[in-house]
Image (cartoon, rainbow, N blue to C red; front, side, top):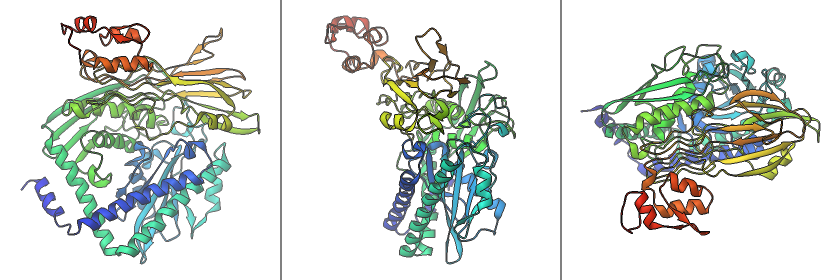
Length: 594
């Protein structure tokens, strides 16, 4: 009997599919309620509007059992944070305890992502752990906002928090709180937002205990085991459908900000029966700058690649789905650096590149399920003193979102953000953003021809321009994709490259590097042109009516329609000249092309 057949037989032991479904979906609902609590109780726009956080629930064996919505790059790495707490404290974990950590080398991602974990006890036993990981606006370091393009070690990026107990008997441990607060430029905002994380975890605890009271400890634990088995079986079933073989994907980061040398990420995915072996041998060594990816971040990106392509959306996102995927990342490489390499940009630039490399490999096996390249991050942090209240602020450029890659049967989504976040981050309301931060928005609109042409074209990006009225703001760029645009697949074309300017069109115009820090003055402007998504398939096979529709909507120009798609449009209404179009597309006759 094969491994998969054995696991299917084991899972058939689940006697009560109705209760299984009810408990599983209740766990997802609890997870969502935790997220709603975070949105409603936090004070920083990065949480209340952008939703740059994730919630999860782990079981008694430190396995993630439920995670929905949120930021995909937090998916599996949060589980490693729980393991770090278990290793540090062992049996010294008690009701009323709450723990905190952010160490990238102990299961974190970058230092700005602070993880709060609350053990859940029932009948005197540790049953579950509710988790909230959130990206805070500033955790110290050389640059305000904690993204530092000149960082050469982790200590330059902010406060490093090992696994610590921050609450005892449901009350804050003031010494620990003071230690964290004194190391940030925004002590009040950070602490209020951390308490919002705590509130989120407490909601998770309350609802989990209600679940146990309703169904009983034994039934809930049995069902959790079944959920893990089911998820593993589903993933193994999908992997077993793939053709056994070895598949390679490769992508590049522009640079680390210190040199102009591109950084290679290479992945080899070996499929054997119902398991996948993911090997990053051949990737470049760790670098000086802040684009190194700690192991937990790298592993999460691999899991996201499989969850978005190999499986279907209804599969449970828990530890069970990860078991058939074995990952090797050489120590000292860009995808598994040695301490104390800086890592601040790992959740954006490098995470996108790791995901892309995996997608490129998987596209050779399941071409109809893998998208072309998404955009990479192009926004800055802008920090300074708000003249309206003389308070320090950190603004992230979330309004400059790019487009998704096209895929079989589907055009890429417009204005959705970078690849690794997969739409999990929400662009803030323009007017609300102007209330929160000292600037005025001049425009935020689709960029014509930013999307890669294809039978299924990429998504369009949105250009974004603001005027600053803080006296001496600091702008930090921490993006990528200025020289490596979103890739096309199967004849699809590249998306546009990321571009950004200070004072575009003025005598003192400056084209920004993808990674740099710049001092500005009142009245300066910042303009971002994010990349659109790559195209999938031959553009000449795109339905000509869809090309015309894109031109009418200013997604594609009339010139691109002709040159990239072979569609001839004439007159003010851009009517299709079918004869010329068919001739250009080598179809012949007057038959309408599809």
